[in-house]
Image (cartoon, rainbow over all chains, first blue to last red; front, side, top):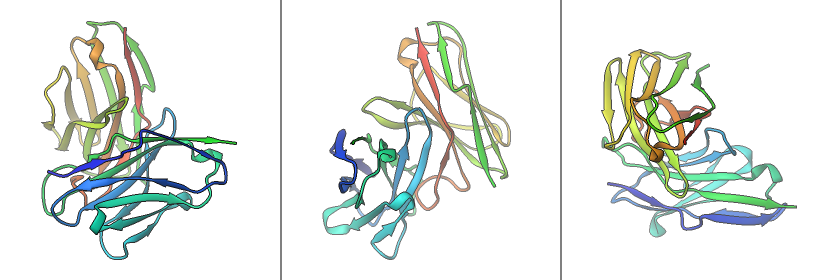
Length: 114
Length: 115
């Protein structure tokens, strides 16, 4: 079965600074990959997803993520963080051709300071 | 467009009391439906999913149950709540089974506190 690790539980960045949230997965083949964002007390919203093709994926709100097969990673990036980006971010992985439901990471909570 | 509604938004219940959380989806037919629980530091744990009316699959043994009485209605229940049932509960739907080649859409969640 697939698994996903988000090594950073909490990250603090200054507004305007760049951001990178780490995500590592374990799966024997090329997986499906997702990043979701959860604002406080809210549900999850899909930021971006990787199914196939270009390994650099553009998402909403100025986010992007790059699938690196050699590193089993799918890190989320944003060049300039806004205060409204403060939220919890979840990476998720799905297996191709199987019946295992998508597995979510434990999340990274982002704090943005002025 | 499709929308998902989940209520109530917050709930405080005493230990031993029953629970009923409701989720409905609009704008689509025969959705796959899911109940997740989110606990601090543990990410999202899939509790139940349903591929059709009356069809419920349980992912983890627990004190909760789920039912799908109508195509677009999914209910999470308990006869007697435990303190450990406290958490943030999320309902979600997807057009096909959420194994990866489709995406899931989430409700706003219910914060349940068992006291």
